[in-house]
Amino acid sequence: MTLPCAELHLHLEGTLEPETIFALAERNRVTLPYADVADLARRYDFTDLQSFLDLYYANMATLRTAEDFADMTTAYLARAAAGGVRHAEVFLDPQAHLDRGIALETVLEGVSTALASSEREHGVSTGLLIAFLRDLDAEYALRTLDRILALGTPILGIGLDSAEVGHPPSKFAAVYDRARAEGLHCVAHAGEEGPPSYIWEALDVLRVERVDHGVRCLEDDRLVDRLVAERIPLTVCPLSNVRLRVVPDLAAHPLREMLRRGLHVTVNSDDPAYFGGYLDDNVGATARALDLTPADLRELAENSIEASFLDRTRKNDLL
Ligand code: ES4
Ligand code: ZN
Image 1 (cartoon, helix red, strand yellow):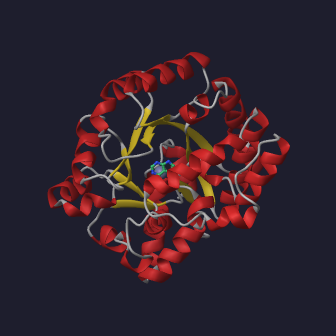
Image 2: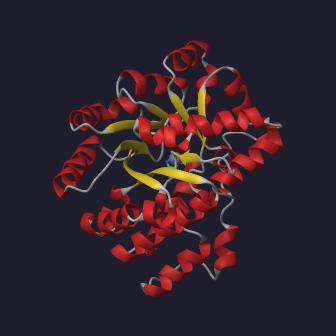
């Protein structure tokens, strides 16, 4: 997309391209269980969210130093800028690295250094969203949040990701209460594989300001009415939805219907290295598959900026 836009649903660890995974493995002397880049790329054939998550977490083994985290972040920002992204609010999964024995300081130093120079180097303003792994317990998330706050790393807000079904938002009520008390923004993945009731919970219990994915809201008319009335942004990721079989193909994606029903939808790339494309690729492929009009594309770009946590002045600069 050549229109200036914001990316609001992007997992930094989901930007590791197969070539980068091999380069990092060599740099850090990590042995990969794949013969070569092509062998790894052949495994990007997912049947559901969990089949993707298994590979996504396994490939994180190649991230060891602050430089690795900085390089991953910088490569994403450069690619995003080339696709028209002028602002990015990006997710990081610190617990996935803590669990492999990488220090929190290492992870945050690398990522935050790269984010801090992004506006100067790439013309992309940034914000960091700390995502908690919903399949782990809430006490661990709370401890991790407290440690990050104590380190003083600038963060914009928190999110909730990983295996959705069986891990409803309400499990993390205390984490979100704490984040809100600290002045952090609150978002959560809900209604990707999980039912509409998880979107209700994200709104009512976690009091999120945006819903990540949220496509299953269409199964509940009352929920759609509420999302429209409260102008809650949904960060939709079309190529992700196809690759994780949330929808059968792009032509069947509900994005256009969501726009027509007045939902505040934005297009995002989720895990671009795994799902077949960055934000501009998502917009281009979806526009072709769904015959989106120039007015639709303008609405999507404007929605992304409005749905961001930027202040009014910077939003107006980008609009
Ligand atoms: C994710 Cl697509 C998706 N859903 C849930 N958790 C995730 N973590 C990274 N990508
Ligand atoms: Zn996601």
